[in-house]
Length: 153
Image 1 (cartoon, helix red, strand yellow):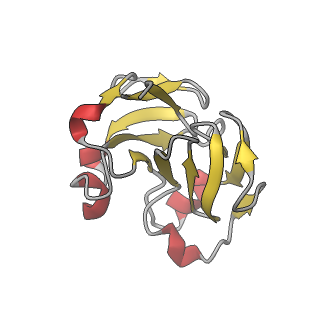
Image 2 (cartoon, one colour):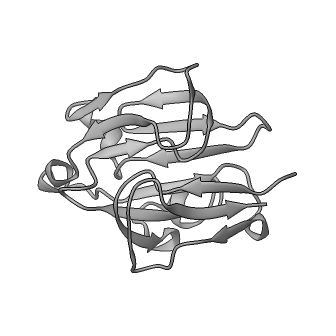
């Protein structure tokens, strides 16, 4: 299987997924990955991290599945499901075929933080083994949306 490059869905600072304040993500229960703490000004658009089909789309989270079956989960903030979609605008639908870098959701990370929630965005290779995923961005560095974040072999 060819390597799959996973792009950062938002602009911000790269965070180790083990530091995310959610046990499902920090323990790698859904798969390995990284997270991005979005920049308030540049992190307001979330893009498709891979080319493929949107198999799940909620205002606060989405899953894009590549043609080979591998899927990437992007979660916009922690506990943001409780916002009921408020402050999020979706720009696509489940079943849409998208290219890497296509804007899927617009949101306001500053408003999420202002409401007492974390705006950190876990980016997870669903059901991958930890040894199949390599980090391409260093924790603590700044990344733009659309720049390489992970490589999935």
